[in-house]
Image 1 (cartoon, rainbow, N blue to C red):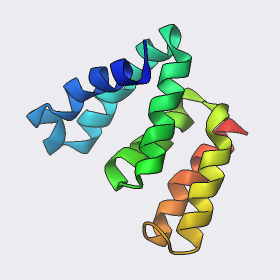
Image 2: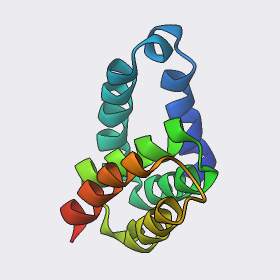
Image 3: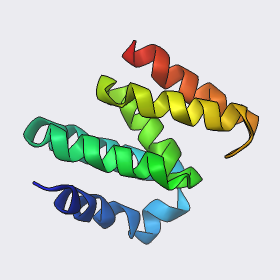
Image 4: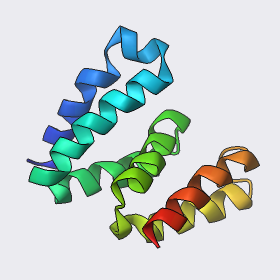
Length: 109
């Protein structure tokens, strides 16, 4: 699968009106799909998470952070460090978002 194919798979959940009303339900659906996807296409999964991190949109970026933590994707440690620096410098998000990035960094270290 390519990055675009993996993104298309996640779009199924991201466009589900039920998922959009409940963040926890959405994340659980995405996590189930991510666990299946990473088995068959780790490279595609990593590329999607790298893309979501780069968007710097709370929904996508923080979902990527949590998936990196839960799936232990150490390949994205440099991107998480950059995100942490951007949060600390005030470039993106409020300071309390650091706690999620910190948890992910600890999980993959």
